Image 1 (spheres, rainbow, N blue to C red):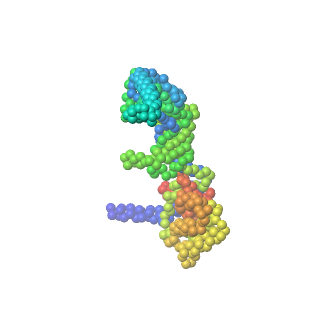
Image 2 (tube, rainbow, N blue to C red):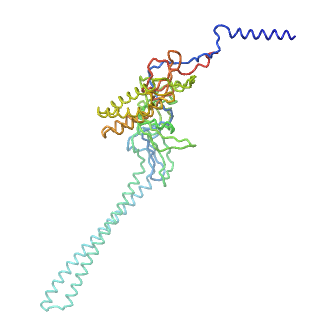
Image 3 (cartoon, rainbow, N blue to C red):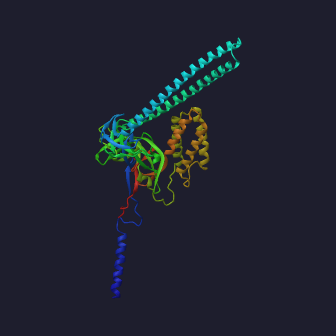
Length: 486
């Protein structure tokens, strides 16, 4: 038995040695196999998806300022009305009686005014007679033909008559005020009578009616809603709720595409007209209301429908783009532990030169400003570059490039004039939107080679390349193939 086991072990060892010495087998690990994609141009479209109810641009709730019983109805659901059309009528009998009573009160007040005016005329006649008596007694008293007491009595009567005129004039003013008061009450009664007609404040379509003939309307602290009128259903408005994470990308004028469940195969378009600043918080979720205006010429969209909205917050057409998967790829470190190849300093200088050219064109720098900017950049790069003239393996060209970019902005900010400041702020805003990244292409020897790029707009699958070292047609590494070597 021992001999048999010995022979089996020897055979196993011989077989293993033969396997490892078989042609094509090596102890060294096989190089990784990468999944790549060709760098190409195309469109990048960033969108925000949400939903919201469809409504009219202007919707007016029609109520009643009076209480009473509905006597007639002149409008129904879907009725087309014009401004001023009668929609309904409240029983006017009570209000007609109030008008009649108010008219009678006005007539009484006017009659009282006539009496006061007659009293004034009487008082003036008495004053005139008293004046003649005073003149006569003065003449007789001068000739000693009458007693002094007669003159005094005539003078007193004249004064009394004068006072009676003042009283009559005051009574006339009071009577005029009473007439005005009663007239105001009559006007109010007539206004209330006119308000028994429920009229349309705007032209449009009746989309809601909450009353019937014979129903009693009770108007107290708040006017009851009787009708709801949509002004013009050829134009509609959507109030979409957008999450706080996406609201920063939305601005007035953004293009909107939406569908409704009633017409799933039809696409409608509109635009963002307003981003409301008031936030709504429900269960710790913060949303903002975005107003979307759209045309509805065929009136197929009804108020209350739910619109599934896609807001286009940015689009770049015919730009160089990379798959988002490539931005996440990082190769394994080499034996030396470094990934940065030589020439990092030269690439940084090239990017800096391109930045200077772009800012010169966008901001409109003068030759003197460009010369001063290059002078400052030379000093900045000299500070960042170690002795020897190149970037070491410990220096990340991407980080160095970010430092240089920050220094460039600071240098330009000190050079631009007040006239150039708005253009500089726009250029700076565009740079803030962009971000730096490193992608890897498949080199001639099958090894990953880094490419430093500046990214712009991104969507769910791709990201725009605004500038950098990446060229159209290069093979971009997406990931290492996990099936390689199996």
